[in-house]
Length: 107
Length: 120
Image 1 (spheres, rainbow over the protein chains, first blue to last red):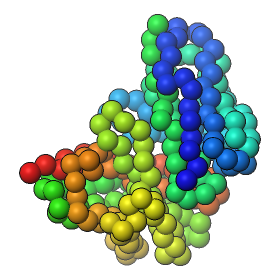
Image 2 (image 1 turned 90 degrees about the horizontal axis):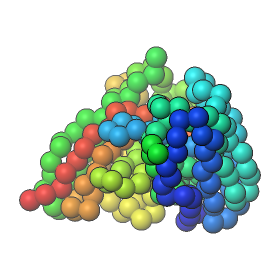
Image 3 (image 1 turned 120 degrees about the vertical axis):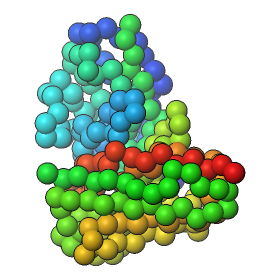
Image 4 (image 1 turned 30 degrees about the vertical axis):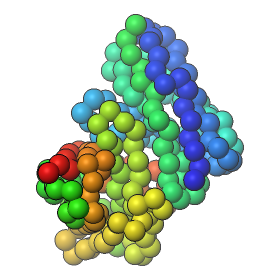
């Protein structure tokens, strides 16, 4: 199985901060990497597909980068509605696997 | 507008078989490239992929659960059914279905999820 490791597991930030979350794959996954946002009690929502493509309707303050084994999700200016847990996921090979999540909390 | 909704029992006993139904609208599972997957999330824990079925009836399963899972589709009813045998308390989780396409290869649209508790 391809292991997906996110860092940090949690972070505290203020509105307006630039936030970066990292996801590392245990082997190369090319650009088969996706980012999801999940708020408490809600289903995950796709933010980024193919490592760097913004899903329709997602604010442009979200961006993704990387290829191979190392990927990042960046929120350029954190908004109140962005406090949530973020997950990466690979589809390079089954079983599809998710990272353990990064919780973004209010500072 | 694409929607998916999970349905099934909220409580099952250990050793029983769980049957979950995903009813969707706004797309067809006869369309080339379209798939529906199941993902679960134990309380307070991360997401875990379970199974996936494509328009051409190609099926994929999590190897760790493959012996317990069966995924099927009924295109006339716009439904995907997941069965999981020999349920255990560790299977307590929210179960989600989600749509995927070979274009994005991601889970584009998710259902609201259904919480299943395994307890005697």
